[in-house]
Length: 71
Image (tube, rainbow, N blue to C red; front, top):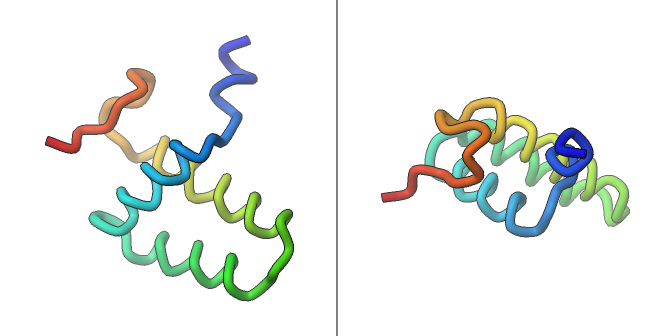
């Protein structure tokens, strides 16, 4: 059940991933933006969101705790 939940991408996840990319990974942010703005398809946006969130989850230092160090 945890695997299914961790694979889901929520709006909060996307927001956190975007904030992370804005601060720490400009290339990831630009890739997401290019994908989203190149197509008006909802599927394309969901795929771009999922890819960004996966990058964020893989690179954050506290993986598995559900919070990001934003202090």
